[in-house]
Amino acid sequence: MLTVWGRKSSFNVQKVMWLVGELGITHEHMPAGGDFGGLDTPAFLAMNPHGHVPVIRDGDVVVWESHAILRYLAAAYGQGRFWTDSPAERSQADRWMDWSQASLGTVARLGVKRRLSFAGRCRWLAGTSVRSRNRACHCRRRSEPGAAGRRRVATSASAATCSSGGSPGSWRFLR
Image (cartoon, rainbow, N blue to C red; front, side):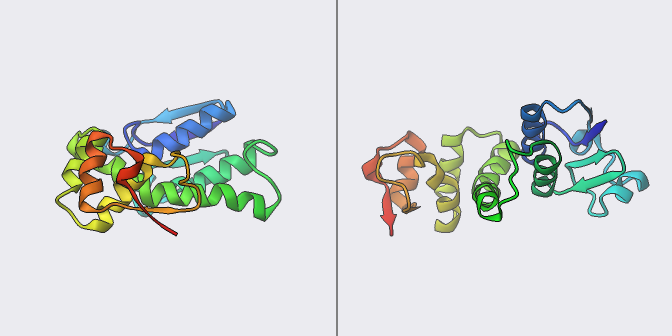
């Protein structure tokens, strides 16, 4: 049986639990990290020497790091649905997985640590670097018409607009 270690409030653990649910894998969840502790025990460090969650054990296989876990689960349980033998097709999922870690992970961590809504995170980021605002706010309008293939850059005005919802015209695009 699959065992998943981590606290459910962790963004990376949530990704793993989502895929476990999508694949319908019978599993056991072991709360670890945060208030649950346990990451510095010899038994846990034997599984993940870095002492971070998530970690899974699937039979004799132990995997740590959320994206490594997602790729493992997709290959082991999701053949044809979440995994393909084609490297070109797999690269499509890999791109979005890595983008989510770099872009959404920053926003998620801010929300957990500061208990802020998305709008609150953008308002907080308005006082930080442009790069941080770009990371946090550009994903907000991902599906707007004409945005495909273009990268958003949050200027001071768009970061402020991001906090109130804004309009598509408030975003500056780069080709």
